Every structure is written in C-alpha cells, then in structure tokens.
Image (tube, rainbow, N blue to C red; front, side, top):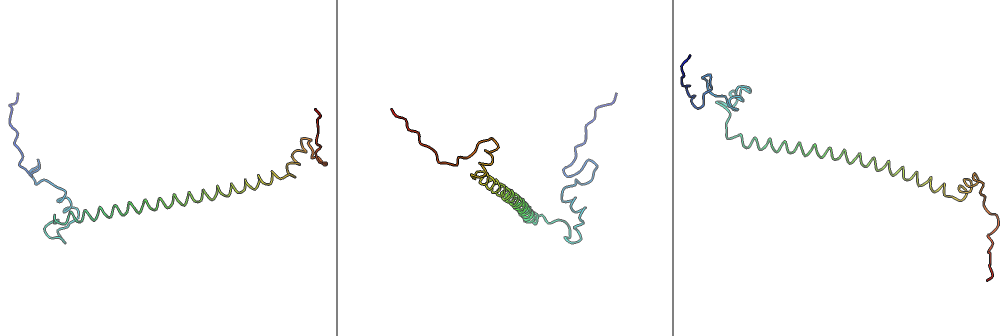
Length: 127
C-alpha cells in the first residue's frame, strides 16, 4: 500500500504545468501579434473606450437591421392592403350590377316570376 503524501500548492499566477497562466490579454497578444505596433503589450487603459465604441457600433447595427425589417413589413402590409382594396372594389361593382332591376328580373324569370306591366290595384274592403 502506498503512503499518503501532501500535494504541493500552486503559486498564484502559475499554471499546473509550471508556466505563467494565460489570460485573455496574453491570448490576444499571441494571436494578433500586437507587440509589433503596440510595443510591450495591450495597453489596458484603452480597453474601456474601445469596448464602449464597439458597444455603440453593435447598437447601431442592431437598430439599422430592425429599421430595415420594419420597412419590409410595412411595404408588405401596404401591398396586401392594395390587393384587398382592389378586391373590395371588384365585389362592390359586381354587387351593384347584380342589384339592378333588369338583372333581378332576369334571375326571377328563371324561377318563372315576371314583372307586372300594369300598376298595382288598391283593394278596398267595406266594413
């Protein structure tokens, strides 16, 4: 059976492999090779204003995208309204045509109901 032993505690800032711990900034330095134009590393004092500008740019892009979507929806709704208006106009014209006396007489003739050619007669009843 093996003996119990104590594990060695890691010092702050070191990885378990013994090298320095990688942070976001070291990753950025490695991937972008910023030492060439920034010198030693990424200046931390520039991060808040740059992140604020990035946030403003994202808000601008989002609002522009929503505005374009809203314009597309409005144009689609306007086209639909125009189509419905044309349908209503057509139906009104058909209704007005079919409710004319001559058209009603033609449909009633199919049921063998004909128009009177003489005026109506008043019937009087004596009490």
